[in-house]
Image 1 (cartoon, one colour):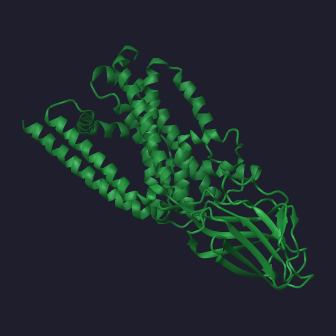
Image 2 (cartoon, rainbow, N blue to C red):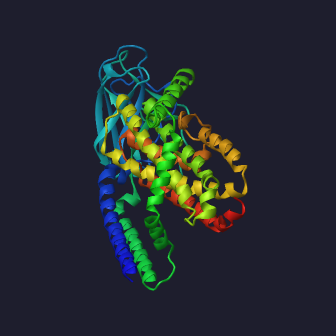
Image 3 (cartoon, rainbow, N blue to C red):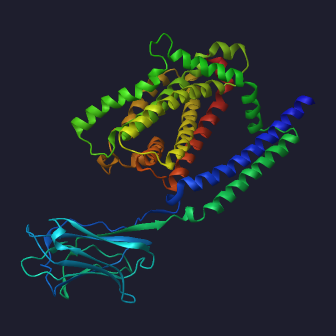
Amino acid sequence: MEKQQSTEINLKKTIVTAIVGYVCLVVLVYFLMGYQLHFRASRGDLEQPAAETGTVELVQGTVVEQTFSAKIQRLQSVSVQWGTYYRSNSGTVTMELINQIDGSVVMSQSFAATEIAEGGLTTMTAEEPIETVYDAPLLLRLYADSQPGSAVSPMMCLTAPEPEEDATPFALMLNGTPTEGELCFSAAGEDYIWTGLHYWEFAAGFGAVLALAAVLIWHRYKKGKHSYVVNALIAVRKYRFLIRQLVDRDFKTKYKRSVLGVFWSFLNPLLTMAVQYVVFSSLFRFDVPYYPAYLIIGIVFFNFFSESTSLALGSIIGNAGLITKVYVPKYIYPLTRVLSSLVNLVISLIPLLLVTLVSGLMPTKAYFLVPFALVCLAVFSLGIGLLLSALMVFFRDIQFLWGVLSMIWMYLTPIFYPVSILPKSVAWVLDVNPLYYFITFARTCFIDGISPEPVIYAQCMMMALITLLIGALVFRKTQDRFVLYL
């Protein structure tokens, strides 16, 4: 009776701790995500077309006008490309953006013609994002006070894009005369993120679901009914000493009789990065900003995935002696293999941080979001590990097949190459590659110094949980037959 009461108190404490931890996490994430929680680069941005010819010499009295519309919720800038006739020009060029609904000038800016280079851009930027021109008919007007022989010329392409239904057509006018083609211009801004605007509602709703689940778990436990969550908590508590011993054994076995020992966890990603940096930056010349940091993030994350799943794959076979003699929940064996690899991953974060600093990247508050990607990666790896360890018992060829599959997986993940080099025919592979999302999450935090968009959080979490669920179900369905094949 005393033992049962002790367990009840611990379960209460666990539930309360989980609820308090969730509230603290929600507040912390809101602070750390900051601006990226509410806004993202607009999907309605207008890209600048390739320049094919000049329009007219923009002298005093000449006007170039471009009508258009853009599905940008918060318009921030409009840019125009220029030709200079490869000479030094003079005068002032003015850009105006007019809302044709009411004729108001929403943006206006002037530029010195002397500072415009051949093929260069002038960018008109709003002091505050403009929220009143979404899909509105707009007029971009260009004029100058330059004299003939010293004026610049706006560039154009010879074909205009087909307008969407009910959208303002793109029309180019030179001195009031309609002209075939489109001005070489672009428009950029940002859109609201719906989930970010309703962050607290989502947080409260998810918290209510967790609280309801906790109440149901407690209610079932008080009635003495079977609960997988409670059983898992009790098992982890009961076998925590064994878990520590197995993790410690795996970690020490890896570096047994090694001169450098644990230092290899620090040195390995640096050496791998150095070799791949020399090969891919010199021979293939990938133009990736902060390439050393880009490279080592991919290496560290994939190395953990590869090592943890490979170790988990043989965890049941490797502990056949214990499994056939002593009862221990069998999922503990692949779990401890993933945990031992997680220790190596934490050590590998030290050289990763050093490389980011040497690359010129200063730490930001977004660094504190990286543990989310690490947890999701660990959960995902555990799901794969449970699946592989169960299959390995019945099909020993899995160990050889997984070696080939993990190598293919590595090349299909943008670890050492940029995403931009993938042809469109195979770009869909990234959409179904969970490792791409985990690595992209970390690169956004480390290299860009900002939080990923909320949808990336959801994608990482869902891929991790779905994989864990599949792995756990397969493992649970087959674990009772393990002893027959060991």
